Length: 102
Image (cartoon, rainbow, N blue to C red):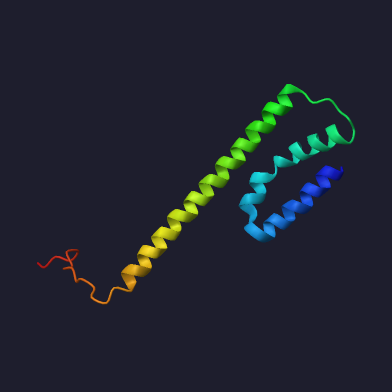
């Protein structure tokens, strides 16, 4: 119960800081926190499936964060290029080929 409560508090903080995408991605993390609290406080036994599942969850979260940072870099580069193009003092005029004269 304590582990779940702490996870929900941290998830609400995450919504305020980064948005709902990160919160939805980190919701499986609750199971890992609960398992850690069970082992440390209640002295429960951990099973191999729990360890493998935890590793897979962490790998998936890392992949998501890596993808989001890569996407943010790409968007930043596109915005920089757009701002450089709009700041060009001598824009090149191109002929309009979309209209045809009959």
